[in-house]
View 1 (cartoon, rainbow, N blue to C red):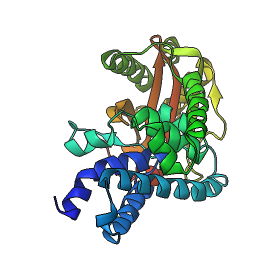
View 2: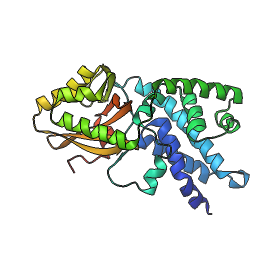
View 3: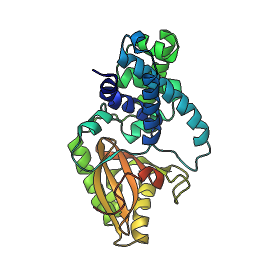
View 4: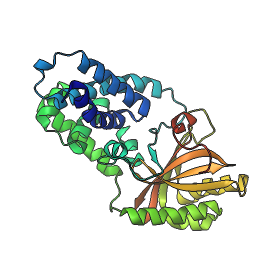
Length: 290
């Protein structure tokens, strides 16, 4: 293979790593481009494994970029959620590669609570199945330190994961019922589909009005959906879509895209709702009803 074709073959994997680390397409694309420039300018005769070399470079670049972004995110208005990857049609080979070991919005939300190095170590081990020796080389740490980081991260992630795995068909059916209830402004029906301790996290980025605090409780979460329908009667329309590889909803108000919504399901109830309203993160989503 030529250097260019080899890099192209590995590009989806590099993007998958960078997106999971950084949460936006633009940052992930920048990391991949920087990795290409370093690959293009390197002495490949010294590279024993191109894949290992490129994964290491991409991981280190992503850690550096995430560290820089953390200071920016500290000044972010409200909660920061990742840019959603929205699919409306059947998956393409590219999208399937991007979402290998699918990363839900809920999972990405938990990853945001980890330090850059913890996040990298956890992803390399649990998602991309690298050996600890390889992770240690990537991060410049001892294997013992990497094992400890992964263990701590795993504990935090498990605390936020649902107790019962929900089949995709069940997830989609539950979401369909919730969508119908929300579109009809049926607050009582929505509450029956929400866990008592459900939480709602919204990201407006200071660009549009959004909740600056996490909403807790079935009544408040159902009320937030009801109030929008009450404010704009017959103008709120939902469409199902895959968001980060899982069933989700796009919400349109007055014919224009208002948000992309992801849902965490546990034991046949919605336990978390993640709503991305920041228009900068929705640029790649159809802006009018399709």
